[in-house]
Image (cartoon, rainbow, N blue to C red):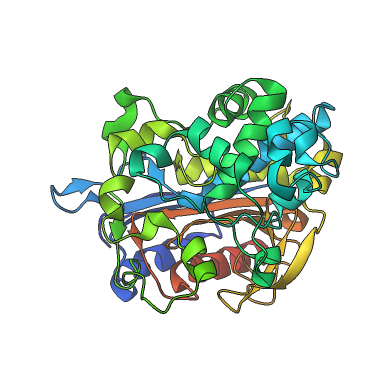
Length: 380
């Protein structure tokens, strides 16, 4: 069972069996899965290797990079500022960030940015890895860049640019980075072991993120159109794993893709959202704000992937693929390569699956099997 450790509440034992089976059936290397129900932990599992090269085992406090799982944390920060009257989702972003009005972007709203409709799916200008980690530099480039006129740009995933756009809005109206705001307003009150911007003294706890077969695409072909070139994610370049696992990336706290978490803490965060923004007597968001997070802003088919997509205010909503489990009211955010984090409000459940082996298979059965077992246990 690859050293599977942790606990499950009575009735949830089958989740442990599925978690262990993932190592044998799907080649899991190191992973953690956790869930809360009605504010109480019911699953807290971990196992495998945090670093296969050295044999370092995955521990209870191992931190894992969850890539776009960060978007759920950043979205909570934006919504908190909206709750406090500092941001309005239906207001043009340029109202808060005047430079953003350049090149025909004066009407793009905060909601359109949150729901991947800003028509800025990539940065036109080539950038180095050092520049990629410089928020001020990337925000400045996007402020000056015109929105894409390609018809596919109206609803395409803004993998990295989403973070520089939302992060700059947060900075403009609040003065803090997303990482600092999340730490002070969510992580500390709720006791979350979650970081957007990891201090050097915590780097030893991080699992090494691995690229599975097919995760790193082939180099750009000469006949690739300019829009597909624009939307290519530099975090999937052939040399990207060196960047993922670098101290500089861990420190950077990229709002779109730079969160380091334990599954236990991510599940606790979403458990709070599943309960309308309150957990253990601590309220971090109003119930109406969590409802706003789930308000559908766009639903359709990805022009790049050909798969259904639906977004609220930064959160992924349920589609027919049921990537966040069976319940009809699911919401949350996935991370590149397989991680999955979300809430089932009707069941008052929050969950998180984090792993260090990224996979290209779609759909990835590892989280889906776990969520199916969790749902069965909840429904018993």
